[in-house]
Image 1 (tube, rainbow, N blue to C red):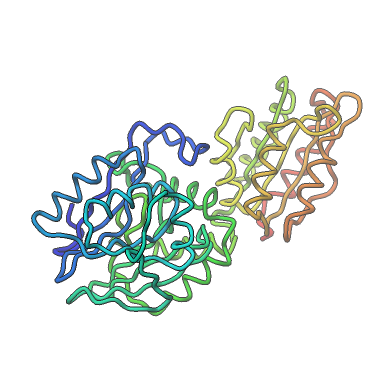
Image 2 (cartoon, one colour; image 1 turned 180 degrees about the vertical axis):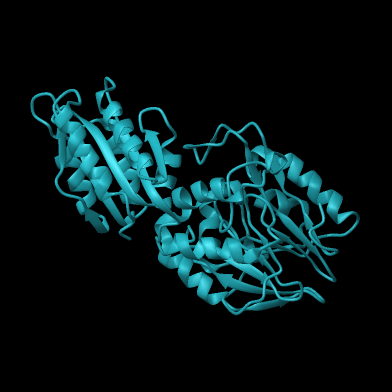
Length: 387
């Protein structure tokens, strides 16, 4: 696939992958992107996952025709991008590997191979000429590993963005709704590192862009301001959508009934609502919605003197991804010694800028008329954005 006259896509789709990074469901597969710039010198941008090494090697050979590559740029050492580095170096013995100092130190951790003089460390802002194309290296530490860098191709104004601007899904399954799976990808994989994303966006603020080439998902050419603005919003932890995300963890269905009741009250008030059953729905998608909306209501059953595990798992993920700057309400259920609210509060107290609604609502076993009144009051309080 041609991105431009001189820039080719040589990546592959993985349609058989069930879990990305061993935890994220990918019903539409995954794209491992790799690129080739053909000039007086030839540069390859990253390899792909070991699962698709043969196909990638064939794509690379076809793109090269009779030529030999001069450079392999390592944007990211995560195995879904670096697995075929040694294959490349053995196949093309005159090529150099270009990477950050931190990536160079990681190489022997992944490969039992004598890299010798084949590795050339590049620095932030350094420029490499391929002929008419000039590559400017832009370090992007902790987006989302410490060794990451991006490359800005100055002639055609192309950003090779590493894992930034990526999304779940194979290219063969691509739809027009980029944001949904890009948002789930961002908050679950990159989301903890908003400050670092902001830092690299500032580095690139004055660079004119015609194309963004991520390591996952489609090449972006149209309406780039849309994608950049979303990244600004996401990396500053700002809500993207005014509305309420309701997440519940119910054992026998009574807590679920309360969740759906308050959701109906909010919808009747004209509020946009998303509801997730944490015991059944994708936790990664629930986390995405928690960051997407400006308000959240959590309802959970008490369990073993603590919290029903699906809710505790969800709160652990929120804490790990530095959830913040939201208004949150809590509803607990307990038949004899309600404890869910206490544990949920403990998790939320460790998060930054959380406006916790009071009072905590406690349901005793099954929802009664008094509980409905309390839930209606909560819906009224949450019927307007406060962020």
